[in-house]
Image (cartoon, rainbow, N blue to C red; front, side):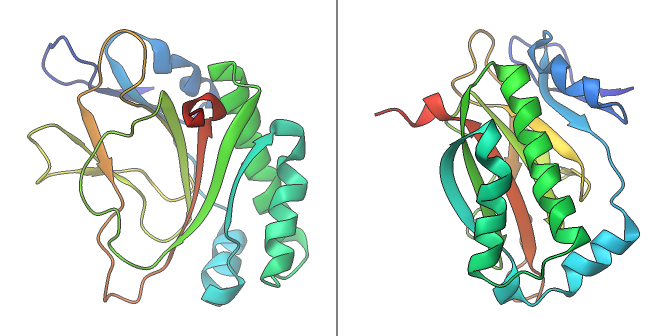
Length: 205
């Protein structure tokens, strides 16, 4: 397990990284602002998703229970004719696994699920989400960037395929001083496919 430690502060800013999924349960540990399950994507899956035409990458935004995540992903894939088969099933199953982890860690029976195709710099500014916590996984393209407040010029990068759980502004107790952003890609020809999961209670009016 690898801990990136920042100077002692009243705010959480540590990043805990491991190749073991259990690291995500450490998000509530004192001083930890992000927990990252480091994963290496299967080469064949990466080749498949990188070669998909942009118009066949699924897009989705919904509030859903964990038991309905898989059919939601497949429905989104059907809308854009994402090819059926082993790798589409892997994508749906992996996002479902993310949702199951989020449900367990955050005790959230319902969640807001988003699959986003990113081709611009719409989220290029470093920020902290106005959420309790957010889970991210980049399936295609460059991973999300992290930086301590005041250190934005030298961000670290969440690897493609890795799953990160980040504290947000609504996290109870100690505040977070760890920022993140979508990497600037406009005019580069790059395309990202990003899965985002938030507790549904953060969307109550």
